[in-house]
Each structure stands twice: as C-alpha cells, then as structure tokens.
Amino acid sequence: MSTTTTAAVVESAGSAFTLSEVALDELRPDEVRVRVVAAGVCHTDLGVAHGHLPFPLPGVLGHEGAGVVEAVGSAVTKVAPGDQVLLSYTSCGRCGNCRDGHPAYCDTWLPSNLIGGERADGTSPISRDGVPLGGHFFGQSSFAQHAVADERSLVKVPADAPLDLLAPLGCGIMTGVGAVWNVLAPRPGATLLVTGAGAVGLSAVMAARLTPATRIIAVDRVPRRLALAAELGATDTVDTTHQDLGEAIEKLTSGRGVDGVVETTGNAGVLRTAISALASRGTAVIVGAPAFGTEVPVDVNFMLPGRRVVGLTMGDAETQALIPALVELVTNGRLPIDRLITHYAFADIQQAAEDVLTGATIKPVLRLT
Figure 1 (cartoon, rainbow, N blue to C red):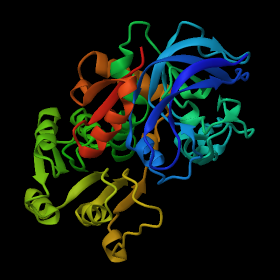
Figure 2: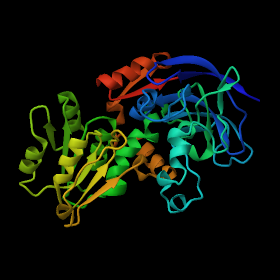
Figure 3: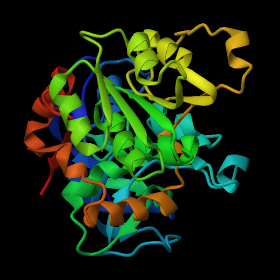
C-alpha cells in the first residue's frame, strides 16, 4: 500500500525546489520507510538541481537524511520501527569492493546513488499523480517528510541522538573526515593542506586536529570561514584573495611542501597548485568535482619521488563503522559540527539552497518536523 507524503520536487534543470504531494511505493523486502526529521543540504543536491549531473527530473533529491523508522520490508533485520537512523549512500554488498570494506567504490555506485533515479529493477519508489519521479537518490531521496530507503543506506543511532545535528554525517562531514583518516592517515608531525573551508573542508580540518598532524593549513577566499577554520584546528590560514597559494605554502613549509592535501574546491587551478605543493611521498586527495572532462596536467618526473594523487568518494567510508564513531565524537563535543550548521524549516529549502551558493551558510540542515 502506498504512502502519501510531502516532498521537495525539482521539476527541471535550474528550477527551484517546490513542495508537492507525492506517493511512496510499497516497501520491497530490503527497504525501510523512514519519517524524516532532518536533512542536510549538500552541493551535490544543488549540482543535480542545476542540471550538472544527468539525474532524471522531475525528481526528489536529498542524501543526508535522519529520522525514525516507521515500517520495514520483510527481509530487513538491521532496524525496527521506532529506531532512530541516519541515512547515507547505498551499495550492492556483493561486489569485490563491497566485500573488501570499500562500498563507496561499489560496482553499482553511480546508477544506484547519483544518476539512476530508480531502483536496480528500473522502478522508482516515488510517484506523483501516478507518474514516476526521479527517486532513490543515494538510496533515500530524503528531501521529503517520508523516505523509502535501502536497508544498506541506514545506520542506527541512539534513541536520544540529536537528529537535526547529526544529519550531515551521512555525506559531507563523513567525506571530509574520511579524506584525512582513511586516506591521508597522517603520521606524527605531518603537515596537511585543506583547500576550501566549506563543510567538507572544515570537517577535514576538525578531523586533522584529532590526528598526530602538527600543522594544518586551511585555504579559502572568505575571511570569516578562515577565522572559523582557525578556531576549529587550523594552525595557519591562507586567503587566496590576497596571497598566491603556491608562494604561501612554500613560505609556510620552508620549501619542503606538505605531506597531504584535501582539495575540496573543484577548481582545477587550485588542484594543480596543491599537487605541486606536495612533499616527497605526499598525497593529494581530490574531493571537489569540477565539470566532466576537466584535466589537470602533472609533471611525471615530479611524481616519481613517491607523490600520489587519489580520487575520493564519500570519504571511502564503511558507514556502519565510521558513522557511529562520528556520532560519539559529535555528542561528546570533540567534533563540533554545530559550528557549521544553520537550521531551516522544510518550507524554506529554496532559501537554504540559495544561501549555500552565496556562501551565507556553510551547512544548511532542514527541520521537517
């Protein structure tokens, strides 16, 4: 039996988010219906809404959901009605990368999460007036008062967990943290460079502060974001409105370079400069995604002394292991993501989206109840 709910629908590329009544399909055996309490707004949602990614529209986006389980499919064993959950990406659980503990690189990742808009069998769990909408975004489509989510998208959290604070853990926060912990894994005394002081970059700064790295350099063009980065753990900041990035890094490191980079801006020029700032055996992690087809040249001989450039999806996080750890760090004050969050009513989702693009807000979180 279908469930009627209210969702924020993007009608076509470039159009605004508008609230609309939709129907959620009957649950499949491995699905869960969640009453959404809160949902973070991410740049990926906005990129799809503006037509930069080939997701089928009209559609329902949202991939940092948090809520309460209302009903479960016949094969679901991980959660039960009444459980509080965070929602993240989905994966098949069967391919080599899933079995090896790297589900963010699942063989089905792109169609199942980002561009498919439907379940694996070609159906959408969301419709309007009998017409299917693009759905199943990251296995959830959580810009709605209710969501049909894959069981593999869910992480159970304590009954008293503050869902409107924890919602962004499912993507943005997890990505920044995972870049540092899962890929860079800095050794004692390491120097890290974080380009871009948005939600992902500032999460990387906070994560770096919890490692043996002793120098954390944050880069941005917005002074108040750099000031926040310094409060959250950056030992140095670079304002590229007034400073050349390459020259600043050379001066800060006495010409040695940095051991690790987390590049979140998606700017090819920034990435090229960040790669050129790597010390021997240094690693640059690409998080920010520019337009498809963007290329960055590298000097092959420069790379030979053990330098690496690594792409990253979802922090290379195994969600059942990382998200509970992040929940504990947030709730005990060691990962102060509240400093990044501004709350909005669900009806104000378009304003939240605009505030992200103008830089007025770092991480909007919608309250749906």
